Amino acid sequence: MIKTFSFTLIAVIAALFVVLVIRAGTFQSRQLSPEPAESTAISRAAALAHLSAAIQLKTVSMQTPSANAGAFTEFHALIARAFPRISRQLHKETVGEHSLLFTWQGKDDRLKPMLLMAHIDVVPVDPSTESSWHHAPFSGEIADGYIWGRGALDDKSSLIAILEAVEQLLANNFRPARTIYLAFGHDEEIGGINGAAKIAALLRARHVELESILDEGLNVFNGIISGLDSPVALIGIAEKGYLSLELSVESAGGHSSMPPEHTAVGILVDALKKLKEAPFPARLNRPTHEMFAFLGPEMAFDKKLVLANLWLFSSLLEKALAQSPQTNALIRTTLAPTMLNAGIKDNVLPSKASAVVNLRIAPGESTASATQYVRHMIADPAVTILPQAVQLEPSVVSSIDSASFTVLHKTIRQTIPTAVVAPALLVAATDSRHYRSLTTNIFRFLPVTVGTDDIDRYHGIDERISVEDYERCIRFYAQLIINSNAPMR
Image 1 (cartoon, rainbow, N blue to C red):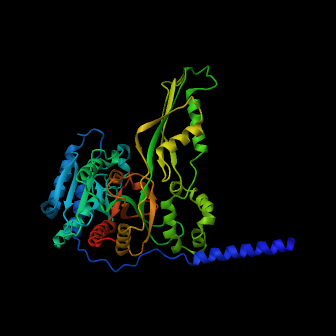
Image 2: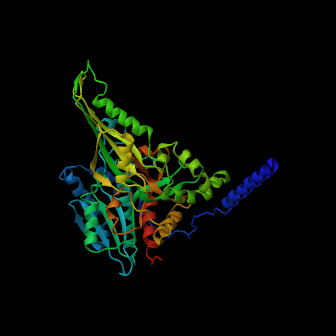
Image 3: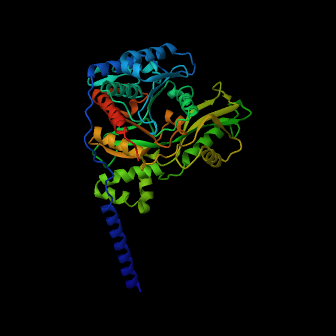
């Protein structure tokens, strides 16, 4: 009997191994091999000058609507000067005081329009860090093969590159078959309520139904994706939701020399400790699962074996992804304490202690379920949990089977032939969330190379974009418009 069981076990293991190997062997590449891109002429000197001038304008987003109004007015004037054909041939509207909507009328009204997005505003620069910049943060200096300054990555390079591409196509007497909208918000960094939200509302009022939207988001990652030597172009097909919760505790206070067993600060610390020790469950959501379906076939056989058989190895992959903050955010709702407030003097027990925790909610969950999870984990009636005003549900997951995704995939492979393309989850939030009712095809991608030392440049010190990447952005947008010219099926 023991011998029979051993033979049976060996046979089962052998059969399982054969199945795993066969699935890995048939794990075919999802990469497109399109014809070469059409040539797009670029005036390098003019394009660099335009981006440099845009960076020099301090379009810092502020909560006060009138703050920095002059900089935004100057930005509009810069666009009018730098792109005369756009100014003459496209219909321009100013929305919410400082945002812009351009309409490039297509030849065929039966085709749904496409919308290209970017934002004018930038985050402020911490004055204490200015001396650490290699080039002044609003200099727009061109040096060492880069354009330097706030907005070079986020997001003026995208905005100016879109305009450069359209201007060049107009110079070539190109007219799109489908209408193309260019939407440039002015307050993305503070929520987009007066910019993108109002542009989207305007389009809804006109009953516009879009074919697709492309906004900023993920990039071309070089040396960051383990198991791949090639650069990886990740297209955001979904983005996480957003929620902040205030945790507050009130107590009698008193003198610190006679502390009670439970203080407001102590109870709050215990609550935060519970949340740290009980992270949200890991789960291979759809965007992350599809990312590995695209990346797996390009990897070595051992990794391909695992990724082709996630029905068996998903828990193993989840454990591996959980080891890094960047990849951990792909598989779960994350929670981070961001604000703490308690006390007025070192020898006085505070009568109130509070903290704000920020959650980025993964697809498949909701602000309600995330709030309930936090309540369940803390399980202390002494802790009041109050959701803050801004609450965003996770976005719909855009289909990788849509014609719009295929066109975007094709364009990336034409303009960055060495890149492996894959869909992915964007863990941050973009202005595209305001347009959710206008189309289900929303993608988030900017063809800028990001290495291990570049991630912290977003909103950080020494923000920059390489001249090569900037020129590639222009060619990418021009080619995307050309590729989108035909009917999509």
